Image (cartoon, rainbow, N blue to C red; front, side, top):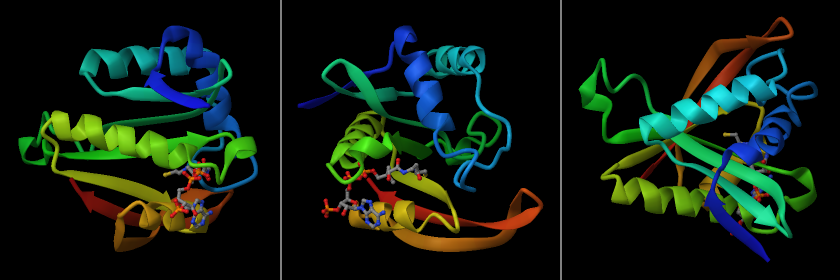
Amino acid sequence: MVSIRAAEPADVVAITDLYNALLETTTYEWTEVLHTIDERRAWLRAKVAAGHPVLVAVDAGTVIGTATYGDFRDSTRWPGYRFTVEHTVHVARSHWGSGVGRALVERLVDVARVDTKRVMVAAVDGSNDGSIGFHEQLGFRVVGRLPGVGEKWGRPLDLVLLQREL
Ligand SMILES: CC(C)(COP(=O)(O)OP(=O)(O)OC[C@H]1O[C@@H](n2cnc3c(N)ncnc32)[C@H](O)[C@@H]1OP(=O)(O)O)[C@@H](O)C(=O)NCCC(=O)NCCS
């Protein structure tokens, strides 16, 4: 039985592992540098301070997924973006295909609606067909493809933008 709850400082090691899981073997994360526990700890503190949700999915006491959202572009500098958020979601491979990703994103959507957000955006590596298919199943639609805006291992990367009206 998987439950969803707000992340706590004690979850940071598991969250770091989830963010690093595919970093060295795929272009899904646009960095070649592994996340560290200290960096994720500071990140979690900043997220909480900003009032942004960080959720974890827990199975038998083990964190097996995480999801969060934040500004889509800088809504302090450009307040016109304040009703739009960009999210990310990571599920442990051992639990793929069992509804955990959906549960995390739907809970994020609930939080975003209460937070008066209107649009949720996923910005996905163009080769990540799994994430694109997953988001389409959750009611997101592809609204754009930005060719070559990223790079990893010397290869240009496309960014696919999907959005869901809340
Ligand atoms: C993408 C990811 C979050 C999906 O999580 P998940 O727990 O496996 O997804 P779920 O089991 O909740 O699936 C929800 C729906 O999406 C569909 N889906 C899941 N993975 C899919 C895939 N690879 N291709 C197409 N559809 C997929 C499922 O069929 C399901 O549809 P249904 O409920 O109508 O049957 C997970 O594979 C993952 O963490 N991938 C690596 C990290 C990543 O790419 N994150 C996204 C960065 S934006």
